[in-house]
Length: 454
Image 1: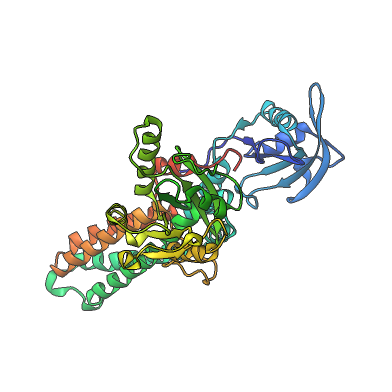
Image 2 (image 1 turned 90 degrees about the horizontal axis):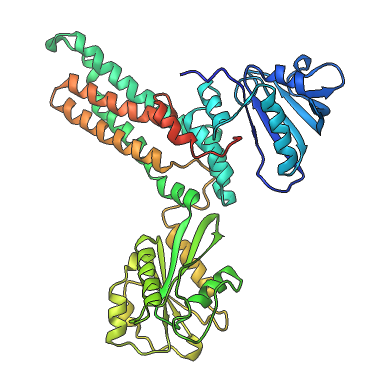
């Protein structure tokens, strides 16, 4: 598939008030358009060397539109490997839109979301994982996420996937070469180590798949739900973790009736922190809906902070409340320790417990430490920045792994033709990760998530 042969343009900076705005133009008519709309000292833009910066004005039929700097980037040394210019003008919606309209009037069309990066992919400058890394960099919500995306953009993940692709291709080629021989004359050297080679390829897949959880947390963030009965300190805990008065705190039971969600970054991991309605029997229809929403969020949570009033004695009602919790993804916050601790620890075996007095702001650091441990137990936080796979990559690797194991099984049954065919399916799934194999539907799915201008 080739990149379209028309010329595209879009505003590349975020909308709203700002010091500058950038309009990007890419395609075969870029220099022609630049010569038409850029009023500057000689020589004209098309005669400038690549990576030249031009001071001038954007001119339309009615007069000058804006005072600008124009960066000239000639293909194939540009981001898209096409002729490009970037026009840096004054910020704000009005001036940027006026410059863009002048470019469009001169013969360009408005770019689709992600079309600049899509052209970079189609023209061979980057592969599909690197293209996805561009979107990850733009959307990164922490420095750690940004560093991981930068590693991916620089080719760390591409190198690993391409090595896996080449390994599988070599195995398939050797198996297919034996099909030209009578069964009794098959060269032993071609096939004797096929099972070991497939096993090594599957191990490489497993290593890549193991990075998915870290990738999911970096890209999507962790969902942490604060739960518990009324008046145990859930909203106070939300405010304490955010270090701001986000939720209304009151001694009146049922004050929080709807979901309150805020974001923060914890050791480089984006976190969605959710305060929920207190769990209790109620005849109030509004509060009941809040409790139903609470239960839905708990079911989806990566981690649940279940707040208990430590000053209350354990009992049947307390035991029933604890029995429905998952110890693996729950931290029990024993709050109100300033009033005494009357909860029997014997009832909490298997749970991680942290004692707090949110009124006195004690126990918060210990709680944060346990949150970090629970979220990052499979993540090496002291490891250098490294690329991590996305859900799309994970699904393709799982399919590739299944096909590779299927090929190994068929090979063990001496069905080399079917084993080779199954291994080819594994190779295709691996190729879809980087774009060595792709269809238009795949590109639409990937680039539709980009912003216009990127």
